[in-house]
Structure formats: structure tokens, C-alpha cells
Amino acid sequence: MKQTLIISFLAFLLLLIYKHQHIQPVDDPKDSPLFRETLERSLDKFKKGEVNFRKTADKKPEMAGKAPQKPDIRRQKADIVPRTPSPVLQIAGSPQKGSISAPVTIVVFTDFKCVHCADWAKTLDEVMKAFPYKIKMVFKNFPLPLSQYSEIGAKAALAAREQGKFWEMHDLLFKNRATFDDQAIFTFASKLGLDMPRFKDALTKPHLAQQIEQDKAQARQLGLSGAPTSFINGQMIKGSKPFAYVKAVIERLLTTRK
Image 1: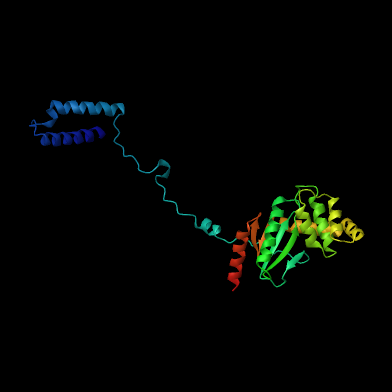
Image 2: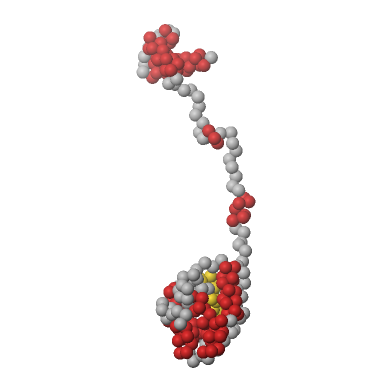
């Protein structure tokens, strides 16, 4: 059946060729030598598998017969679900400075032995001066395992706080970040005019270590892994940023509040 269809198709083609070239056809096209020669060649190729009359599917084999897939609407909806908000920052009991009613609160998790933390502390001092009465600064200890003296630095600042000298000790520790050790903190305390027996006794009390651990626990709860990490009205700022960057953030916050 297939060969008969092929022969009929080829005969039709030959008739068109003869007509186009003005070749006088014989009474029966099948008796033409040219026809028989062309037919024999075509049949020979067909037997050898060189001619394939099957239609080629436009689609890939694995897609044939399958309905087009619709986008996964459930996945799209899941992608736009807002994330769970971060835990509320607990600032009660932490060292603070600035106006109590300031519209902008900066909470800083930092390490006294970290060079980037020292740079960030200088930038924040500039920010406080640029926005008087507009900023409240909250300090959180986040000593990292970068130095064996990070923990003692944190304790020294909290011990000085008990005598009203936290920010002064804070500045001395960062100023001498590269060199201070467990002995240098006594020099700093003496320089600040602290009651030395009281200062030394505070360093041995467990409540300081507990305060530091509370700050570290909150940092872990917030998913923090490095210092400095800050929150400006809840907006996370990682690392030490230039003054212009922080200034722009604060100006935008102040404008939004108006």
C-alpha cells in the first residue's frame, strides 16, 4: 500500500516536470525511461532506509501528547508571604546615651577588640554630634572569639558603668583596642578616677558575666554572626558604614516621621 502511494506521488511529480519543461510526454508516463529510472532510484533508497516519509514531530518526544504545564500558583503565593518579623530588641538595662525621647534609636552590638567596631564607634560619635537630641544610642556587648581579651574588655566597661563611667571606659578601650589586656584595664580605671577596690571586686561578680551573656543570647536570637551589627529604628546595618551613609538613613527616618 505504501509503495503504491509513493509511485503515484512520483508519477504526479514527473507529469509536472514534463509540463514545465515542455517535454512531450509519452502516452503512458509509466512507460517513460526517465520515469522508470527515477522510480527505481527512489525505491532503492526507500528499501535502504534513506527515505523517510514519516512526519517529524515539532515537539520534543518527551513533551508529545502532554498538555502544557501551568505555572505553580501555590509556589508563587508562598514566595510573596512576608517573613516572620525579627524579635523585638530589648534595650532595658543596657548602657544608653542621648535623649530619652529621641525619634531615632541606634542599638549597637559590638566587640572592644574588633577594628571595624572601633571605626564604627567613631562614626557613631560623629552622627550623635550631627543630630543633637535626635538620637538615642544603646550599647550591647557582643564579644567574639577573636581575642582572649574581648570578654574582659566587656566586663571592664560594665564595671565602670557602676561608677557612672561606662562611655568613658568605652572610648578608652576602643582607642587602645590593639594593645589593651587584662592588666591595662586597671590603668584605664585609675585614669578615670574609679574606686579601684570596688572596680576590681565588680569584675569578679557573676552579674557582669550574666549581663554579657544576655546580650550574646539576644544577638544569637536575632541571627547575628559578626560585629559590629546595628539597628537604626529596627533597620539592620551590618559592619562599619561611612558617615554619609548613616546620615542619609537618619535623615530619611526623620523625614518620614513628619
